[in-house]
Length: 375
Image (cartoon, rainbow, N blue to C red; front, side):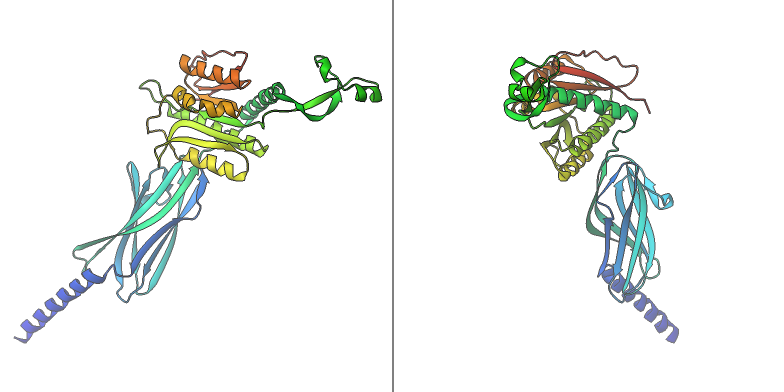
């Protein structure tokens, strides 16, 4: 009889312990995540910090903590992660009473993008490792992975060529009422520019120089449309890297720079548009917008995007640089019209070596080929 009572007591204690554990295991238990950096560049490494807090007397002999994140963030501890379209990262802890555990997990940013983690999942078993108990904790952390900027000798030559076109355009837009200085006469200077008083003092012909009527705004027009069923993600990603590098160069020279694209924001779903401004903050705004461009969201035709924004581009007398792989007639005509009214523009075609460049230079539009090696 005594043995029976002992067994019944043990069963009752186990049952009550199980009920108590089930009711209280996740009370005052929190898991938080945060990226140590708010932004990295693709190819760089970052750190994700996991914090588990158990603020009660009840300890947890086994706690599995997991979260889901895009597979373009590659964690070094692959044995604790399962990878499909997303990576499910999980770690196992033994959490004592009133304990705080901090773990820093390194990762590599494989691809441009905007990545969020919105919740974590906690899993444990009963006191005797029986039964399964689950809980979720909301979190809010995000990471921008900026596009890697194009660089090297080819890009340096490209930027030098674009700078030359921009300077030539500024001379075409000189304001006769804004005086900038005096220089020596050069063949081709009109006679009405000669400053006769300065010429008499120096004994040689001197001419007046005028400032430009435009502040020199630059608009980067980024087309990521695929006309056919064939997808050219590699060409579009190259175009995004070129836009990031050009924006950095122009902004570094104090030139107001903006970006517009038919690519869609992965959060808002709207087409990307960053108004032309100058300053350090503008570089961040452009890089964030390029990071959030989702090539899986079907873009509209860029010729229609241009038509919708044409009035604004014309009113700013902006120097427009189109970056695209498309060469259809409607797009070319839209750019030629923009160049004709804005005193010049550039059609930058990002193509594979075997692709033909069909667009030709015109008086108001310069065409430049940028070759992209496959793979």
